[in-house]
Length: 614
Image (cartoon, rainbow, N blue to C red; front, side):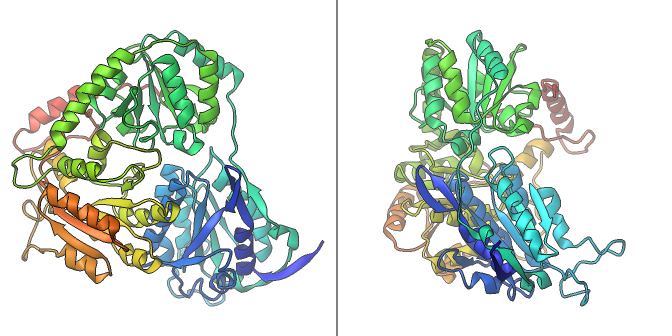
């Protein structure tokens, strides 16, 4: 066996650079790069190694560890999990800053490789700078926080452990069913230790999307249910996009005349103009989609976790005989809600269903009528009116009219995702990028950077509220540094407007959410100059006061050569009342606040409609 003497850090870097992926016949690097913020725990070991492979494995710097991980995750999502990135930090706060991002990737089933520095494996200098000590066990360190939010976790205490650990990490990162974050902790001393690694370890390896077809028995049962369904309904989740199953979904829907609704992750599987696309489903869904969901006797859920926003906290499917067929590559998800499982790649599963079913007219007429009604609602709530400040819906309507078909929009938290799910008209596949599995404030700008890196030919619009902007905005500077132009639409509603509305509905008061009211203020309200702040990081920035001015600002931003920030104030009290569905947010069983008894009675009535069936 031929060997080559390398440090652990050098071997790791070479291995990552040797991983390739076949995407539609084109061979691309599996790892598009490494985001790194160096510290004493990774600069001398892994950092030294990365500096030697810049031509094949570029290293990027960022300003915040959580943000750079969001960027890496967004990149993987935008490439439909075909490519990914790694993130490395020092020991201590640099590492734990990434734990939130690890949870986000875990929830959303997205691949990212975390390589945090760790304390010394030999323990001679313990306790080292930034080391978290457990008096009961020296084995427990800060990086153990990654365990519950990683799909694969390891700590390399000997260089040769890489030989068996790295293939296991790649298994998880590339597996359609088990996909998620992998964490490999790198003790500082081990990173710099040398070993005679087998040269074969660094031979180029090409990964391809694995497709598992459906089990014959499960397929037969699903076909029988759909063939005899009187009111079938399809819910398209993110698995449709990761499988590249959009065409197969459309073919089945058209073959049987079945209306289709979309989760946040699945939105854009069909163009908004398709006759069978009913739009978003669930808590933030359209009336068209939710009416079909209430009536359905068979729901074909494709590539979705069926989370509470999709199912209306298990109260949306009102037909007493309703059953769910869960077509999912992950058996863990396929059995939720007492579903009839159809464990399969989405593309192969949908094709198999279509081939086994006879064509029929289905619910095309009813779908057309309900689409027309929702189109009228959308026009009404997104059109300008005379109110002093526009609503989120009106801002999004103006923006939707101004963007081009290939422009990508990115959002994550607050009130904007709900309005987008209901109202945004997706013009082309892959242009709607919502992180709503974890709904993580601060994802937006960092995530937008990852999307831009993955889709350089598209303009990327980041939609962010003032709350999320203040939480994490530093990657504006990174976008300037990297030459990755973003167009950031900053909607300023004076605080946490979305949760303030939820608070009003559950408690009847405003408290600790908005700057203007309900917040303890021992001093003056901070009047934040968002335009000046964005400019200080190198971006172009302007504030607009009307929807007409917004359209003009978008045109200027599209022809600009670097990141632009467009600021507009919005009414924090207004959201789209049409559509939607109940969401289970507990109401206090005893309270002195006005109207508490009525709110509790309404909550208990809605709870009574939940189906607790697995």
